[in-house]
Image (cartoon, rainbow over all chains, first blue to last red; front, side, top):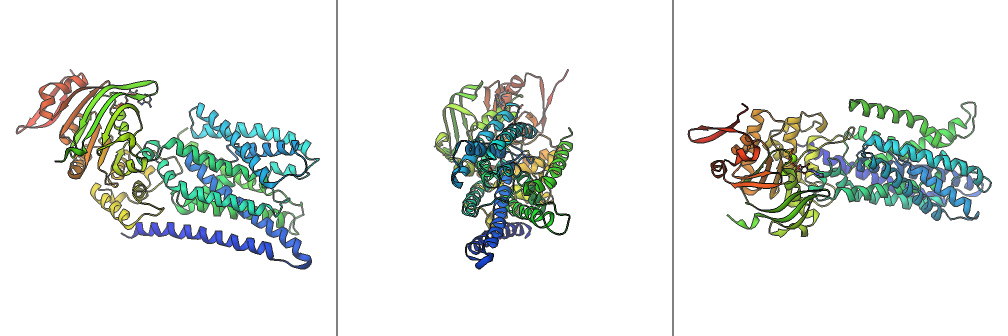
Length: 329
Length: 258
Ligand SMILES: Nc1ncnc2c1ncn2[C@@H]1O[C@H](COP(=O)(O)OP(=O)(O)OP(=O)(O)O)[C@@H](O)[C@H]1O
Ligand SMILES: [Mg+2]
């Protein structure tokens, strides 16, 4: 029977695809650094920066979303639903509030990561205290999310005098993107790739339950904790760059699983990353070209995060319905 | 037969944070035999099996594969033994049967992608356990009996030295029980098998050696003749039993309800 060899080929093909994709990214960033002469250089740089940022952020969010879902065995979560993103936004706002105008991108990324970590801790503690079911995580996350979003909204009015683009942090947008973000995002996506490679085998065993993972030699609790921690924190740190973009991390793994016909964690995170990159790029371009373009009555640019929510939220509701119906609840 | 592979359990206390299940447990589980742990619900069968892959805290020594369990690393435990209990997959994160078999071997190969050998073993095990026709089905779409066979296959596919089976007979119809029993007996040659069950009929038809457990205490151990002679099966379940013999061979045990 060659069916199983075919399956192996599938894994090889998809991982190669991911490698090619990463290579293209490197080429693109090379172009980004050297393309465009004369008067159009600025425009080129701005557009390329934006495209690169959307791709990289989508990649990171899709990939870490898949890791979060698999490690928590919960198809309803991403860094947005769990409140991790809002925690990051809140921390960044606080930082802007107390620091001078001069700030470093790397530092604000670390700050966002710390905020995400705090939010994640609260969500996990609350959800685990009520049994740790997947709906418990969603509800705890919504609570934490509302808390930090509310606080961030409040702060944004104060911070706006220092940084007029800060309001975008709450919806997520690439309008105010700075080219210096690109290397940072590349580092973050490299880290998430490494995390994916290290965690794909243990995650596959965790998928079949703690007891099963244990007899395969993994300590289920520590393994899960480490993966949730790292993928959550990476998802949160992206917030410092482009604000809170929800649902990409939630939707992409589902699309990946659907396309692949499997939940094998050697495949799903990569393809979820690619899906996330494509979705976010499309959303951002839709905002830039269609809504702000000549085709419709021009409404000006809408933040990409808003467009993502427009298709992401109904998708989330449909998964929720399917999940609850399947459970007989 | 080489006795170096026996499992030695010499434990003062074992159990859960707020619930000590075993006190002064001293046991030898013979290698290359089928040992059954027989006892009523809550007697500690699952706990005993889970102890053998470090899932239950204990004070004392356990020697397995001529090494102290506490000193065996997780990755080596994965190669050494397989545990078959319940598995459950989250909804919307399904796996197919052959994927689950390949994942079960993931502790045996290095790198992310399985080798030819892993695929061969997966195919062989599917043939042995009679689940070839289920290969492309999703685990979540199997009947509980079919799933039971798949889970057994997932344990066998590792070709472990020690095979720990937690109620391999549950959810199975009469013929499937007989088949599973035969299948387990066929593995005896190069595997030390420990089965936890509360069905004495399945036990006497499958095992060579019996450990009778009740409330974390060993009531009796020995061959079937020995434990029946001492009326230990009655003692452990607290019920009257009638033994059915055919041509001098014990073939069934019937509980008396009356
Ligand atoms: N995670 C746990 N924490 C605390 N106590 C537990 C835990 N799991 C089991 N126990 C207790 O340990 C004792 C032994 O349980 P165990 O699961 O080993 O029984 P068993 O013989 O496998 O029963 P069954 O035939 O019902 O499967 C029981 O009293 C049970 O309540
Ligand atoms: Mg049990």
